Amino acid sequence: MVRNKDRYSSPESPVQETWQTARPKNRLFGRIGNKALARVCHNVGGGLHAGVDIRRVFETESMRGSTRQRSEMARIRERINRGETLTTAMRGARGYFPPLLIEMVEVGERTGRLERVFFKLAEHYDQLVKMKRDFLIGIAWPMIELSISVLVIGLMILIIGMVHTGPEPPGITFFGLYGTRGLIIYSSIVAVIVASFAALIFAVKNELINIAPLIRLLMQMPGIGPGIKTLAISRMTWALAMATDTDIDPRKAIELSVRTTQNSYYTSQIESMKQVITQGGEMTDAFQQTNRYPDDFLDALQTGEIAGRISETMEIIAKEYEERAKLFYRMLTVAAGIIVFLVVAIVIFAVIFSIVSQYVGILNDLME
Image (cartoon, rainbow, N blue to C red; front, side):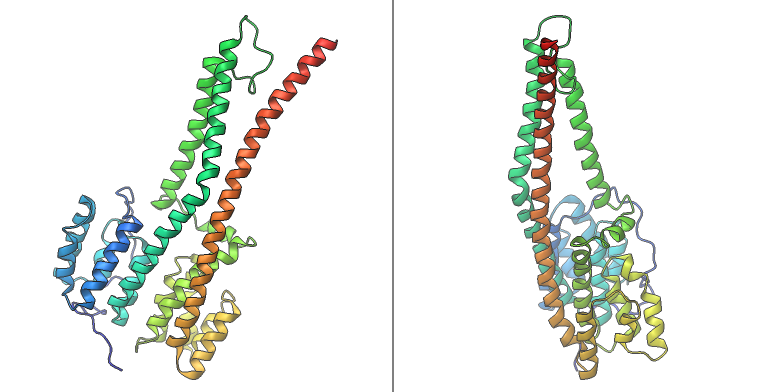
């Protein structure tokens, strides 16, 4: 079998970083967006496919995109010129590239299929952009309803204060809030809630907090757990298909593919899996002893080993898992819309309950 060779550096280059190498701690510089990343992957994959030298490819990319993007692409070109691998150069980009991209690029370098990796990554990030757009469209109307509800409540608080006269509080308020002072308090509470969610999203996106324990918890929940596992295995099966299509050591193939899950539930078992191979076991044995992989994947892997066609078998099942992953994303969109709708319903119920309870109290006082 004729295999593509890395055009600029051996995968076993001395400057190659191992997967244990610490990632950059500074995440506050921001990360490249999925839309821009998809475009970069398309361009790099197309350049490599056309036989363009990797240095020339990134020199061209250093003239495109935002200022930060051009700067990082130029740094990558310079580091490659110094003899570093693309994986090493990307790891040194201060968190600008997502971990999945770096892991998959290493798979491509190790297997000599960097061009194919970039085309697949371009497809992956294009799909993420589409799913994000569909997600935002799916929750747009519930979010509009929620925003209108919040604004109406604020307006109601202000109007109550405007029409009320006298030193005593009005008979009907929104949980004791009325007038300008009440509106300020209410607006402050809403602002704190919105800012908290924004800060949480920012922290998760820039990996400023460790969400691994939360992910492990969610993986135990019906509905959500299987979906998260599907996303991880979808990436892993595709990486394993590429890794096993070369003469790469089975232990390294397992390490590279399992790392692409970006999930400690799976990556924590890498060393024990490699030990099984060292002791003469098959890949199926290595995956099976963890008790963390579904039967359909194990059956497909075993069939591939028996037939001597692991790569082809993994490509087939990778497509199946990719379709399941897309379905899970669609389910998340629907669930998010329902959750926002329920929040709107709760807000409206709280307003009605507050007004009705106060009105009943007024009637009781009048009857006494």
